[in-house]
Amino acid sequence: MTSPPPKLDAAELVEGFRGYMRDHNLPLTHQREAIASALFHSEEHLSVEDIEAILRDENVHVGKATVYRTLDLLVRAGLVDEHDFGEGFKRFEPRSARSHHEHLICLACGKVVEFTSERIERMKALIADEHGFRHHHHRLDIYGVCSECQGRAAVTLERSPDRPGGGSR
Image 1 (cartoon, helix red, strand yellow):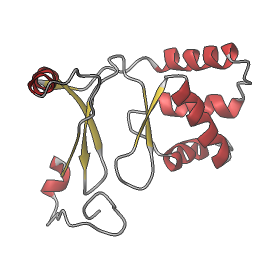
Image 2 (cartoon, helix red, strand yellow):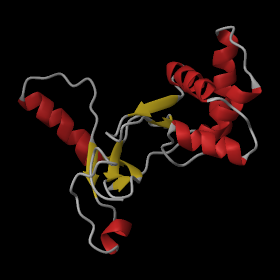
Image 3 (cartoon, one colour):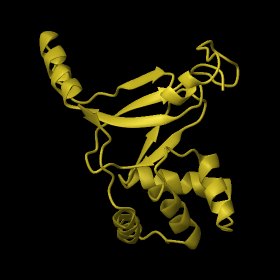
């Protein structure tokens, strides 16, 4: 059975960011806190452009460089995970309560679904053992077409110039 991994509470993550900034004698500006809050309150894997759009909708004016620098701080603080799903840009997500999970990535619409699987966790240990490896960590990203896109007309998985990892939009 698979299930989505639980997320830490957004308020806990914001407080963790405040603590990290305080412990490292870094200023916690309104813009940095707004960036962190936008990311921590999202259920999605956000790009820099997604974060900028959220902040724009909230009438928070933040430069792209500030978004990048703040994301770097959040990753270094261990509060955010950075992902490269082969789209030509990175996506960011709040750290899960159980830090490890897998991803299903739709090649048609770009949707990312998180899941955990006890079977995968058991298999990774067996596979590593079969090959004489001591498992350290793993990452599993499964690329395909989500159920919503399968229901749409003629989805193809041919590579397209605007989706480096996959299919049509």
